[in-house]
Length: 287
Image (cartoon, rainbow, N blue to C red):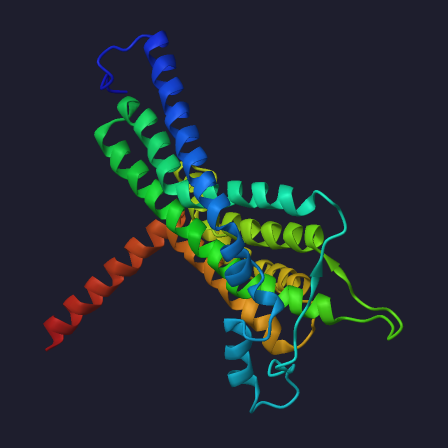
């Protein structure tokens, strides 16, 4: 590796790491304070959005499914799930913990930049270009995954489970802790899932994965994604299942293009190109 760090000693690197952590913690602390101040508005406008009939996804699904028979009814204007609190301290601690998660999401690009700035002096020039692209792509995919989790996966799961009744004698009462645990879990899981193309690229660079893997196991992946989609949206209708399945399958195909082709695949592509050139030469001679 290049000595871009100017011959820094171990203690110099340790000092640089310390300041990286200090700047990151300060950024988290500042945004956590900001999040704490505006958290009541965020709860009313965003976090509790899926509990009301006017949520953006429900309006869109109402428009799409209203003319299609045998589809679930998303046009119920009376849909409203009341979230209750059992524990005396839950609202206060949820206020604090949600502020931290809010700060973590907003500072994620800056935290990635701090990591990049710390490791970049030890990289070659060509490695810097690759790693810079990796950080940008990974950050974008994380936010896209969180958006899919918030606007699609969690509302579909929540609406089904909150209205499901084993018996009419049983009334659903959803606690704040239960709601927030599922809310944060599904959103962050989707953010992590959308890092699959980046993980595939990394494994390809290390030589553990190539494009033939996706071709060989495509059928298995389709079945697995269908099962996962059915677990996420257990309503059972094809439309709801496809709403979740299609983004996940597109993610699988995107991962395929992020990895290197196998050596055999490369040779076959070269042979196909040679055959095309020979065919073109024969056509020219014949003409």
